Amino acid sequence: MTIRAELRDLGAAADAVGLDHLFLMDHHLQMDFVGPPDDPVLEGYTALGFLAALTTRVRLGLLVTGVTYRHPGILAKQVATLDVVSGGRATLGLGAAWYRAEHEALGVPFPPLADRFDRLAETLQICARMFADRPGPFEGRCFRLADTRCRPLPLQGANLPVLVGGGGEKRTLRLVATHAHACNLIADAGMDEVARKLDVLDGWCAHVGRDPATVRRTVLWTGDPIVRADDLLALMTDLAGVGVDEVTLVSRGDHTTTLETLAEQVLPALTALQPAPRR
Image (tube, rainbow, N blue to C red):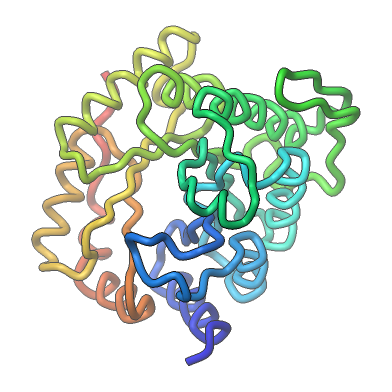
């Protein structure tokens, strides 16, 4: 099967089975701990534009966009365009970027971690201004824009969901509380750790004067999604019990078959789950 046909079938299956989100990764070369270097890897936003034309319901995004890869003004334009052509189904996922080997291979600057977080903070501010139709200059330490005008505006406007990936307690979760609609933690560390990170997020919400109930709590689980249905349902139940709203599963191999298996064995039972309220 060609890459085009595989992506087409993946979009059709995601729409058909009732997924809330279909995320692609934001990498440009295959990661050395995932597969061989000659594995094909598509540029994320180009691929999402293709999926936008083939789907009608599922939300589309990258989990997550590395802040080093695109200037924030261009990134905001890409996401606004995706929102327009998808009929208002874009989600912006952002992270501080981490894969040094990819940056070095493609000649992309890879500044120190503190600088990447500064860029992330300013990118969140720039995207919020552009999505909310607040044109004018932006003067930051990392970026200077003469005009944050965005035409066309995203159909979702300022409500276009912005998700920040990572569980850093000093900067990442504070950025979520200050600027984002959702967090994205790694679920593999265990339920106690997820619950503790969510408590830290609640603390930052209190610090900045935000109702923690307005932050959507999502996690990424990197295990094999094709496991015994009872085991996966137990995992989902436990995550809902600590307040998680949404779980993203990593599909490997035959993605369409994975989705069809989940649709038959797992998704019907998930409709009854409700995340625990935040204290």
